[in-house]
Image (cartoon, rainbow, N blue to C red):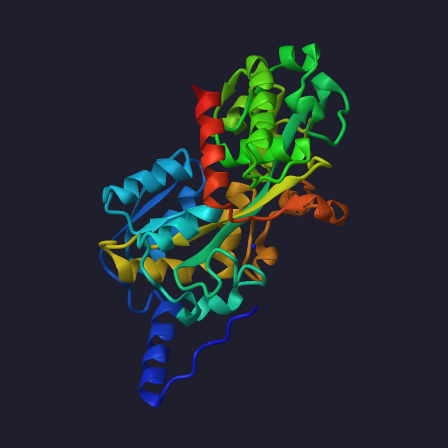
Amino acid sequence: MQSLRFLTAGAGAFALAAALTTSLALPQAAKAEGDLHLFNWSNYFPPELMEKFEKDTGISVSLDTYASDEDMLAKIQAGGGGYDIVFPSGSTVTVMISQGLAEKIDASTLPNFKNVMAPHDAPTTDPKREYSIPYMWGTTGVSYDSEKLGTLPESWEWYFKPTEEIAQAGLASLNDMRDVYYAAAYYLGVDKCTDNAEEAQQILDLLLGQKPHLKLYSSEGTIDRMIAGEVAVHMQWNGAAHRVKEERPSVVYVYPEEGATFWSDSMMVPAGAPNKENAKTFLNWMMEPENAAIASNYTGYMNAIKGSSEHLEESLKNDPAVNMPEEYAERLRPFKECNEKAVELRDRVWTRLKG
């Protein structure tokens, strides 16, 4: 987060696949009908791309948003919403599959799956891409305004243990249990999937010590908050940092030397989706390089589609917050499946922190 190969088929199946490929490649010739309901993170899908999809396919699109994976998952688990596409992160993909909350789509049978780059074609969360396709990928670090704070070290140190100057300039955290907990673990040199109660207590103590210095925990509005100067420091996803820098060039995105989470978001069809075929049309359409690039240009994150770089804005290509310098690769910490005890400890830490 191993390459897949297209399945061979008999003549009849091959003819059917060819017909499907043609209909998807030439949407203007035979447009689909009906609706498509998206459920996505806020500020994470370009309105112009929705309009383009409607124009290309004739399918009407609506969009609702959520603030966290937990919020999305709770709604899907309750059977609500009637959504056709959701955008889960990392381990939430695994949860949806294991709980029977996802439709099997066999992404490798979609014509444009050939455009998916390794290792995104076979992630640990869905190795055969039976239930998902990639959307955006990125990192979780910390941004700060160098105009207000000068140059700060590439470390979590000053973020978790802020000086009075940093605290007064304004400090904010994401409201994401995994990102917050994992960053604290990296700083302490503790396994982010620790099932040791004493180590979990160390993480809690660090976060409780930081909490009085924080203005808020929020995963929404991080871009506007930084642009407006409401805070000078924000735990942030790299794409959000890129969009801040477009308006406030003095903002610096840090890949902390202790470690930064590397994550990827996928697109999935919830079990019982009312418009499954339209959803598959959408997934195939999103694997076209131009469409993936439009999403990247809007979100500020990289996609996993070959050929999309030709359509990326130069500012995206030139920003180290998005196009990460090679020397930072060793700082990235990929997804890891935590055992039940580790998850329980993490949940208890978060409940205590936010209580």
